[in-house]
Image 1 (cartoon, rainbow, N blue to C red):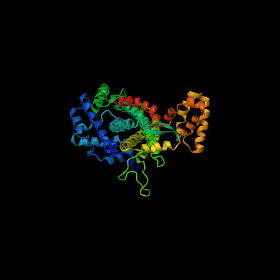
Image 2: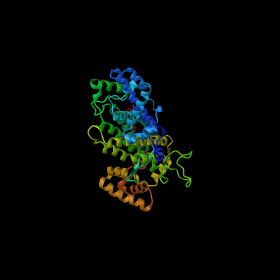
Image 3: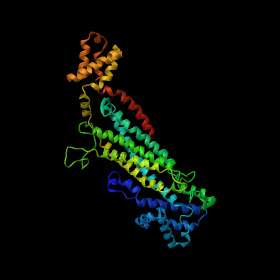
Length: 454
């Protein structure tokens, strides 16, 4: 697979290698080897033929760029590859050459190879996803009692627990990991059906060959071929797309909290990371950038998979090929986002002091709801609501804290003094105390999420 320079800087070398041309060709040859071995075991072809074929199932023996070019005219990558494999086998054993690719079809080779490299890609994704999720667990537990502004509609709302926020980032990742593992067990299955999916050339021994090839490649044995039944396969791609979207959510929040005017979180810096030659004061959130780029591109990839599901009869014309072309990019983008956010979270810098200053800058207005509820218990909801409307306007007009204005109002009113405990009132303006509900919910959820990771 040829990856453009603009794609490659948004992902990792390791995931690029998984879908590299040589890796895909090797996976195709692995299928051919397994097929020959299975057919020999069932007596369909001679054992000597299977051994001869196996000797030539090494991608390094072939001119891969030439095979890629030839496939443009052949209409399938498998056709020129099988031709070259047959030629290589014939050079050492003409008798064995007639048994190459026996009873199979191009889509069997290509789909199974795609399954094999996808399995490798999922292994990388799972490892990085697990690391990132566990790191978010650590951050959540460390900051359960750290106050931070919650924001709704891009505006300051109330005080919450930073640990609660981190838990909210982690939860979709846990679910994504579970869904990917479940769907992988269903989707990573052998493709072997022959020309029209009936295994006709292998006769009654076809199902036994399928069983043997699936075992050889450590893939799920399919109920039947899935040449044009792409539902389980597409579901796997869509789960990857959903994961990319969840990573984009984390990146969106992180980048907003890293803005200079907010400055509550920041990605690690140094060694040229996120710097600006023209503006040395900047700390660009490059991990967030990569994850957001992935999230921005993923919907189109997912839509392409869905759009190409209506495939004609027993072999698709153009739609299967479009699916193949879109498939690797989903994994490259998602693993790139995972790796970038893992790096960001491993070195995440948290400015709890700045979080408190951002809370304080709002003059205590973010505690208005808690105070209203407390007052309602003493003087009734309508009166409390009316009083707080008046007092919040006064706090803004006089540039005073809401705590100061409410305390003064209570002390100035004999009726309120009898019903309101000032000590209790003051605790309602404590940012750390305001984290209690969020922290409690997060503690319980973290236990469940950690259990789900095992």
